[in-house]
Image 1 (tube, rainbow, N blue to C red):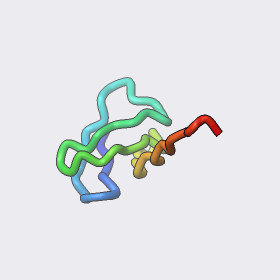
Image 2: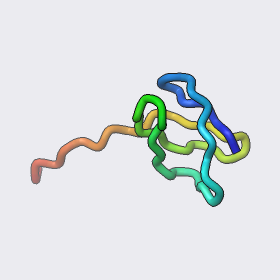
Image 3: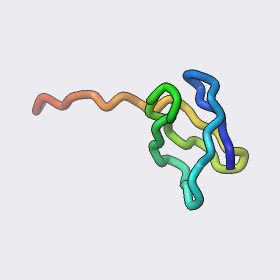
Length: 55
């Protein structure tokens, strides 16, 4: 399965067994990507995790 990095347009081969919601790293630009769909394969920039300062 192949998908395109939304950051740098690189074509990425998804590992076998990849599931929706999984986080991958683009081998070209190192962007963290979330698998939003398996069929068809689609990637989006992973949401940034915000710090929780105990509030």
